[in-house]
Length: 233
Image (cartoon, rainbow, N blue to C red):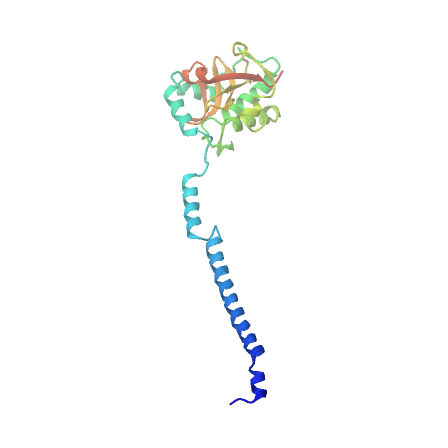
């Protein structure tokens, strides 16, 4: 038998304290389990479910190595370019064999036109690289920008669309050496640009051929010609 004093020590207050201690431990255990489940299930980037979605997303969006629709553009360009200068003629032009004085822009001094022609020829054969503007590779607007900067010390905007807003509008029949000519090759306005030379020829960075000389009479370019701008007046 317990004494009265011992009963008092083991009485209701002591039992209630023990109950609450056990209850608190159980509550803490439940909270810990809930938190653990939340951490495991709730971290989007770490759970297998989200990792699988990330993999699908990355595989569905390949690295952007070229302009929008560039593969389609190249395919159509090759298929529809039915009139183009002979390789020997391009080489002749690139070597300075033609000065294109017939459709000369009077605002461009002869010395400046010679400088521009050298710059135009300098990059012949350079591969097409979206975003490029050097001998390692260049795109159409990078080519026109580089030619104008190095020959005329004129800094054009980087994109063909922005370049189409510079200078003044020129009719197709009034084209002169050095004019910028614009085409819609991707479904977007002024998505391609070239430098007019003369005799319906222009220099540009082609998606399929790299920097080359093409004819404005080619079906591909006739169908896609949009406008022309004169930068030097």
